[in-house]
Length: 161
Image 1 (tube, one colour):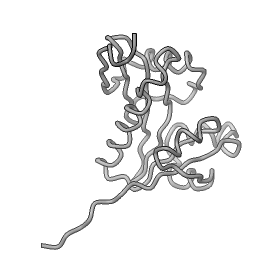
Image 2 (cartoon, one colour; image 1 turned 180 degrees about the vertical axis):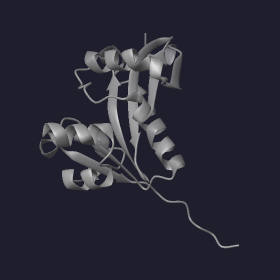
Image 3 (cartoon, helix red, strand yellow; image 1 turned 120 degrees about the vertical axis):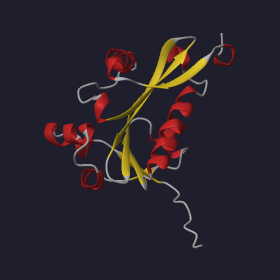
């Protein structure tokens, strides 16, 4: 069965969805230590009512951090990840964010397809010092070992009446 044969639903995660998000991340081999649903906005993608992927967006002032992007192996290659990323980027844009960051050492080629380019640990720590994933990276010492990616979002044109 392909994704086109299934009912796909993206929904915003509620605090009670934390076990579902953690299960998806564990199934995809991703870290769960600093996942705090209340610290941002998370989405769950359901395939025929079964959770198949998730993504999170931690918020700062005019900037956000994409994190915890996961699609279970059996649902990969069908566009589900792309739908989750577009949802997060749309939300960031609607919030008025100027920039979106993320950490990714393995999937850089994937993120460049969305327009992300290399950044630095210093830049993300300066822009988002209070979000859980950056705080974890700073306190546990892994932040300088990760690759950081940045996307500058298009800003609406200001017209004068």
